Image (cartoon, rainbow, N blue to C red; front, side, top):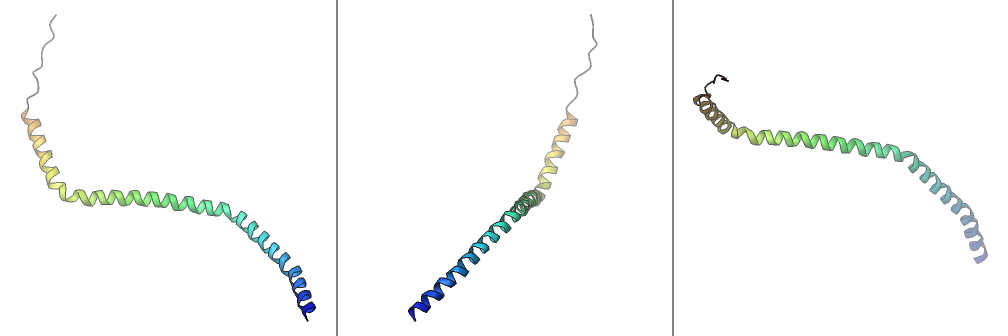
Length: 96
């Protein structure tokens, strides 16, 4: 009975080990084929993440600047008034 068990184990190993090696080789080949697609997917994710992050940053800056619009408009108005009040220098005639 022990001999039969050892014989079944030996035959099972002769069948299972090559099947495991074939499965490993197939998995490796499929992984090598899929590497360019994974790299392309990573590049697309990175580009989308950076561009959407930049858009979100611009939108957040805009939302934060909206309450400051009256202060900016007041400063711009004061600057215009000061600019209008300042007289330009008189033109001088060139004399030799």
